[in-house]
Amino acid sequence: MIAAVRPDTRRDAGSLTLRLAALFAWLAAGAYLLLAAGVLGTGGYQAEPGGEGIVLAAAAAYAVGGLLVLARRRWLWIVGAVVNALVMAMFFGAYAGDPSILLSGGGLATKGAQLALEVALLALILRRR
Image 1: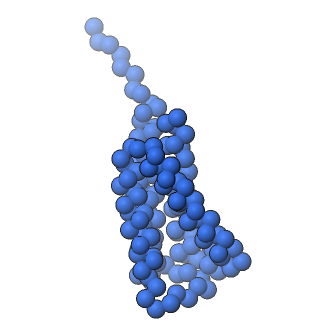
Image 2 (image 1 turned 60 degrees about the vertical axis):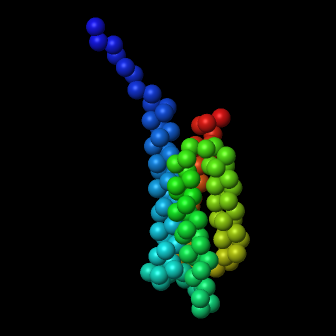
């Protein structure tokens, strides 16, 4: 007799969310690399010469963060969600009055990936309660 095996859709959905969170972190890292290379614009923002170091540090942090998401440790997801939310809050707080920066290619690319990452991290955190 053949037994019917039902797939664990909750686990499959969690695995997909996990992979999406890592992907969004790597997309944010890629967007920061494109910013550092000058491919993505930043609207009216003029960086000081040699100021791409912070952008490269952000790219490295998101690249490593994407790997840490895959470690399946809830506390890492929580730390990542808090830090990511702080990064977005500081950006919007600093440039809220300058739509040329908020709506620039660099602003939309980085914050779009970060917002998607935040949603995925929150989904992972809440699912594991």
